[in-house]
Image (cartoon, rainbow, N blue to C red; front, side, top):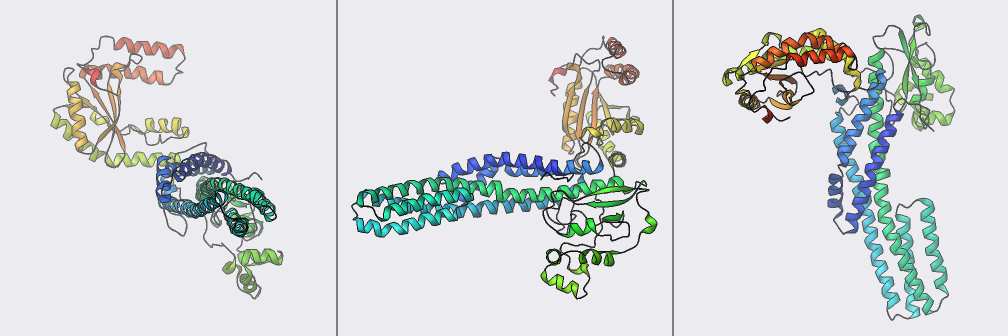
Length: 556
């Protein structure tokens, strides 16, 4: 059944990516094992060469980011830092959980493959003995006497190899047919039975290794991988949902919704169907909603209940009474599923259901997302303003050491309205535009004859202080753009990025003359006549500007 869970499509995409990469892992691992490589070494090398763990990490994070966005009601957002923080009783970060999953998957593959390799080697020994019997001079009596042990070995091999049920039954029927035919045969057909059994065992042996590797990677390990993707994505969606509605006064409460793919009766059924707060079945005050996910693999979700749909004046704590009332309406079998055999007896004897309900937690749902995107962007702006004095000190020291000047130093912090306009225009594209790279920006000035040398010297001085140039754009070489200058992005030691431009006095004056026209052009469609006319005006301003010496040596 197709799941109604809002994260279902992201988990389906995760599954597709896993299976595609898993197919390559199976192929390479089988090749290495058939070539006789040590099992542990073969697994380690295969995981490394296929970048299997990198895929698992990235696709898990993609699912989490997409789920957070869905909970917030957005098309896409980057992976928020909060989504990597602990949230469950394990108190593990996302990175620590993924590392643990890597180990678990490696161990599962190793255990299954090691067991099959032992079966493989034993089957090879039986097969060799069968061929020895076929080609040797053994009497009919000896052949008849030895055959049952070989039949037993072949049957045992098939039963212990993880073939699919129908395939396993088919292979066993072939072995039994050989056994029946051999019992009443003369020595020549008996030898033929030996040969046929050896052939079948060889085929089973080859297929068995492939099947075991497939099961290890595409079934057992995929279950482990999907478990973390499901659980973390469900939590991320809930984080986004709560962040979206917790301060929305038009939303009065939340309703607990059970996914259509809900596999069995569990704590979620109570959450969705019991009236625990006097507001109706499965409806919770915003500050009393049970935590999501309620258990591993849980894909339940919440929906908003708006003002007018519920009367908060009727709210009362009915958790004990409401839980008991709902449980009493369930069959004995369902009660045992929910509470356990001993728990059901304890509840009937008067113990609170909260003490015995499996996976129940008194914790209430709180979002890890402290700020919505626009608020987050302003936090980043504030953060950059706070560290600007430290950055400016370094920039000034380098200017002094290289005997260059800083232009427009008083405008080194981007104006807040300009920054907000940029955020509103671009954030929903799904990248981290709230981390605008030009909140803090500087311009170094040098003579045209030595600008290139000064750029190299400045960059080296900055790098010595941990300020690494990560992007370079040489607009002097771009004949389609009227702007002329060297624009760079520099990453500071704490990871934030700033913009540094390099100009001659002439190119800076030209830029300033063009700026008013550029601001007007920015408001127009790039396909409009007015836009093109303004572009030609800027070209006209720059027509007499001479490029600095050796400017082509500044590579992007």
